[in-house]
Length: 251
Image (cartoon, rainbow, N blue to C red; front, side, top):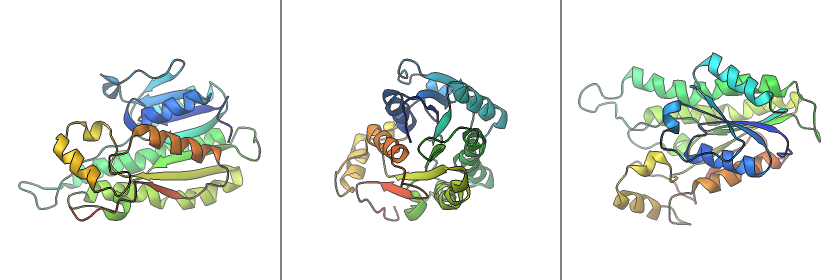
């Protein structure tokens, strides 16, 4: 898929992995729309020049539809990268209510259903574009290594991300006739806002568990992989781990 001249929509684009994708795609010549909550932009690094901002929640169908329309107005919408998501550690039998159905539902609603909502809206626009070199578009979703090795307390998060991983192949198979590819990245621990508030000793300990390189991932490395997935036409229906060979233990 040719990035230059294509329109791209990146959810969760205000910071972390999403911002890294915004930066990579803008540098490669895409017309990028960064979709995120207004609160997420507070204190965040400014996006590159020319990147358009769209405010909204991935669970809001109307806001997602408007963001897709904004992106499609910039050029043929051929690229969608879903990075919006939240994390929460909560055991079922913690003091008090523990992991509630409400909290479980919230994580699934944002991480899984939000990803589906954006994908659903975006591929409708992609399917209307003219093929270029046998392709109309690419969807890159964000799963997690927790999809495979969820730790104690991560039931809701792991389930939501496992859903993202699980829908990758059936989406790719269904959308193949429309010349649209679907892939996903399953990152390990990365230097994002999610980890910013943790003690340095904990982050160092977590990084030391990663075989090589023994450190947290850098958002630019996620953005580079997302760009490669978009540009390589044979990558389809696959979930790729980006974790330095980390296999998480139960805690």
